[in-house]
Length: 275
Ligand code: BTN
Image (tube, rainbow, N blue to C red):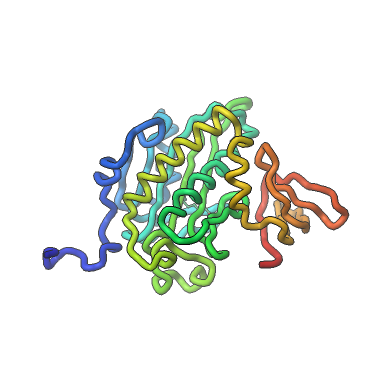
């Protein structure tokens, strides 16, 4: 019998970091877990640790974030007791021009892991969104510190909606977001998701470093949510409209304009103009 003061909703219980540790076989990623009940942003905290000399594979995990950040300066909703928010310090042997491939690599590991918890296929919207049925389930935010010719470190931040129910989401994201619990109809133990994901990231990161993004490309392409769709790509004050055709060996999004010219996109916001 549960104690009378125990939370009746398992989704409301704090993350049990010891359960994560028990499931982890520490390889390169997950060598050390830093757990906080609340931080501003796990990416910011990981950045501080990296600047202080933390080693590759250390992970910052928080049960809640007060200033969770998304790509392009957006806010990332980070209530306590529901979801996963974590950031991994990486010190990859990649040239700075390939730093963005970390996001693509993480999207593969993330989508493949989330599939284990739902009866649906998680898709990737270039470069960092994980979608199911067109709704956002998870996101990746990588932030790199580079010198002229080397990457000093990359902070790989991941947010996943786990037990966040539709009726708890703020109005403005409810129509666009989903969660593992909403998709599976059941409570999902965040500790299991996190441990499996760290393993999957470890393996995909190894492939990226040893063989390059091209070795992960078929797995990424198999989940590409925008294939053949009309999209508008905006970057700073420039934009193009065309059909999304796939991804190049170096990770650029390939967009074909109406004249048939193929554009390699390395940065920008992609808006689908059709479903
Ligand atoms: C996006 O889809 O725009 C990226 C969202 C990334 C959110 C995660 S939550 C953990 C880490 N800390 C942050 O402040 N952001 C990332």
